[in-house]
Image 1 (cartoon, rainbow, N blue to C red):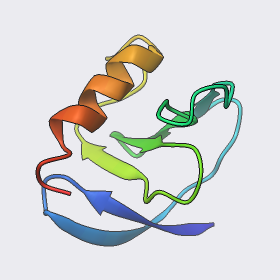
Image 2 (cartoon, rainbow, N blue to C red):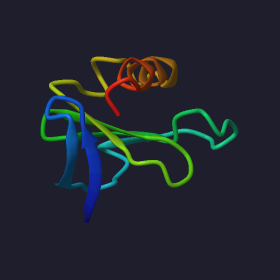
Image 3 (cartoon, rainbow, N blue to C red):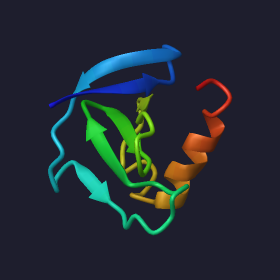
Length: 85
């Protein structure tokens, strides 16, 4: 499926093709409205989704393995990129 995400390297919205499967996606509980909903590997990049209707964040050159599938590390990446969003 195609989704619109914010590419941190390009500093703009892009459309990416993504497959949300258990092999590529780590899902988290939606217990925190400011938390992380999921992290997904897309061709060597990392897609981070927050709960609700927020635009997902695409970070090039990272993967779930690099951040050890950690929700807090994904949240840190979101916070680091808030200035540019």
